[in-house]
Image (cartoon, rainbow, N blue to C red):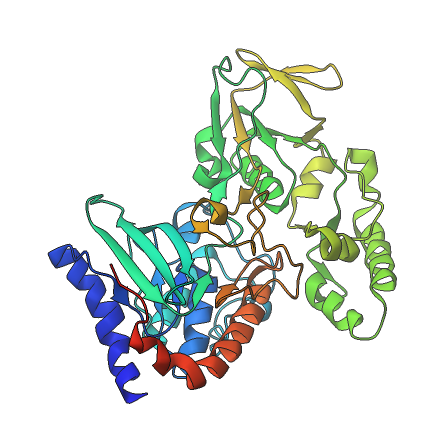
Length: 425
């Protein structure tokens, strides 16, 4: 085990830097797991492993930690849940932070987290493929340097942890007439602030938490936003009875059945927000918690958008039928002019693009086939962290389980893989 500890720095991190200097072509043995993705999920997994004395190597395609939070989120973003439900394992948020930390405060926390556990990812490395070698019983992870495509590497490891998340790539729907539309069309991943849309008619497509908050931001910058709402949606107050709605829900679920808690939440929501259906926001037949549990669909936690819908500053529209040069035709026959369209249409996993020879992840949506709480473990030392559709709290649960599971085999089996029972080339 002392030899393995020595390899922690030598075989993984030092060899990564040798690739940059020497363009090393021979495979690199990683004594612990390889983790793909340096977002909150990957950091949580690495920290939980480190606490148990297990080294790991994080491979990240971007040049920084949490690239989605860094570059693909809007300026006004805050955590939608209180910080105690969003902290990563083994290190709580500083007490000085507000209940709902800002984007920049969360990024600063992640930096402190990585520094505290001495986590040093291999940045700017695209994972081209990862496949289990049944001859040598190891995973082969092949990478390519993002800015120097002739620099490639192959890592060998006994465990592979997929931490690229549910939001690796934007979902961009194809709408008839998109090529003809003369205004701007952008995804929320590139939206920063409503300041550039002042005085403009803007259509936001998608009524999740991001779409709702972008509409509110546009209002605050004197734009004229409209919101496309195709499906039924649950809108809940962010706070109920002096507590966060999420925290209250978790407390009540300890004592009462989910359907009872759903009815209680909907009753309070009706008293606080009124009948949302009269503003074009129909509620689903299933309650918010049951819908989340069965289908992973998150309710919207209102931070002020509904008030702007009620006073007419945000218009609610039906689904889009087609686009024209400067107009949008909706499925109900209405036609309105718009200067810009913002797609709040979400994200998807990219795991099927690079993970080969495994049926742990669905080809359709890139998520584990087994539903929560059983989707974290696959075959041959393959794991998934952060694919629970339960946010940072779900990622923390995954990370702890994975570290505990690897610890059992680490103590018994890690020394055997040093024998290399297969050719490395």
